[in-house]
Figure 1 (cartoon, rainbow, N blue to C red):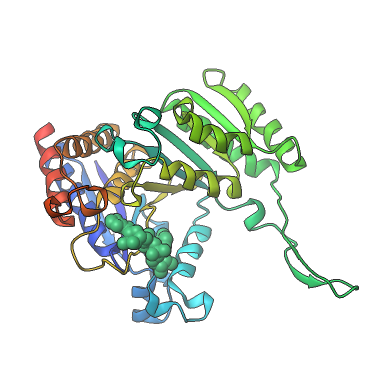
Figure 2: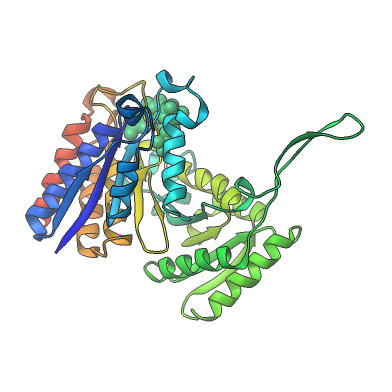
Length: 361
Ligand code: NAD
């Protein structure tokens, strides 16, 4: 079996953590016999320096023909003063929109060995494993009309439009039920249907899709309550699905239940199960090139890719168990350690994960 991958290292610590992803794929190739064919392309600041365009046509073309893409991070202070459309982050936003990556998955998983890293009490979060699914290409961030105008009475008015059509809701609901069926068969749809008409439609369409998946227990929750419940008793959730803005806020909240940003993977999928798999963190220019970045967010993004785009469940489980074993054995990078002097670097941490993958078979 061969999978065709596009590798987008990006900027800052991007290339360092992407190298960790490649090492993990190489280990998987050795033990599973599956081949991961890798094409490399430029995105972000690196692409701007090369061609003056943060998303070159060639990168887009390669993405369209790949089964999935692995991406590090983009950005850096040297590009912050460029015109907005030339900035590294604009290249990434365009890539997401060109590929119609409407389904954003952000798991909040707490590895048992890291239960002290959360700001919540360890009995509230230990064993936490919630998947937050955010609609990524619609809602208030894209709705029109939008703008800042001056009214006839001279007062300035800012406005945005929260709009979803039933097809947009339906496709994210279908994706959410599919994912719930790969996990604990429990889905919570989050909205604000007591106040917003768009949420009324959201609830109606999600319920309609739910009637075709009776094996999944569906419930609905208002977003304010969901925020409270995520802090009060986060383990009551398995999969959460919600719109763009609510998801933006809740996924950061969920992420922080687990401690360090260096541990958080993500995926953005389109309707053909192509996905862009990336750590939640940015390019961290402050630590770039020092071999101190935590590679686990990237490695766990590879695990998601194996599971959600490539259908390689056994390989995904291998990666997850290997990361768990490395953490349980006490190995830490600086960001998740209490004892800074005993930390591993990016490469050494990656090596530990690879050794465990190869020893698990
Ligand atoms: P950041 O996530 O890059 O860094 C925030 C803090 O977390 C820094 O102190 C950094 O050292 C630390 N950190 C991040 N990843 C880490 C890791 N793997 N291991 C250990 N520590 C880690 O966010 P920022 O500083 O706000 O942004 C820096 C640049 O990244 C900016 O140019 C921003 O636009 C860009 N950015 C890109 C993405 C992306 O490519 N998806 C996302 C967020 C920010």
